[in-house]
Length: 146
Image 1 (tube, rainbow, N blue to C red):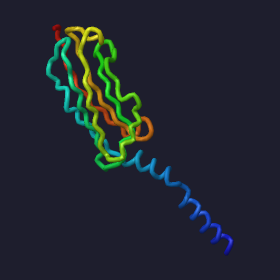
Image 2 (image 1 turned 90 degrees about the vertical axis):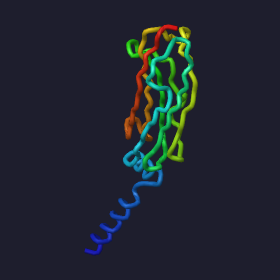
Image 3 (image 1 turned 60 degrees about the horizontal axis):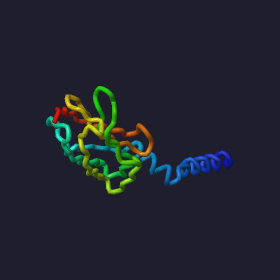
Image 4 (image 1 turned 60 degrees about the vertical axis):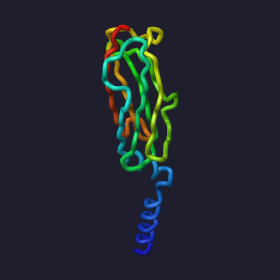
């Protein structure tokens, strides 16, 4: 009987300490992270070829947890051709719970932008593992000839 009790206590202690700190942190980020995305710029207003647009997007964690991954891409609705994809490394690991991207792009023919086309700016955030806690926000705008 004593061996059974001792074995049970040992098993319980082993299970209780099975996750190390890194595993516990990953579980917290995977299960408890609530991201929100605000696309402050550009607007959905129509643009013209050769316009410069400013990208300002804010990624936030509602639980003040680490923001692990972010991505912004701008692509043609019809062809899926990208003219913007950033940051170069999506794993930003921002521990403050907020991450902002400010950048400028030109809507030029050299970039593949032609008049009478529709474009989407898509902003995405996700936790430590792909697909976990993923949030996607997007806006669409039309580009007219110059």
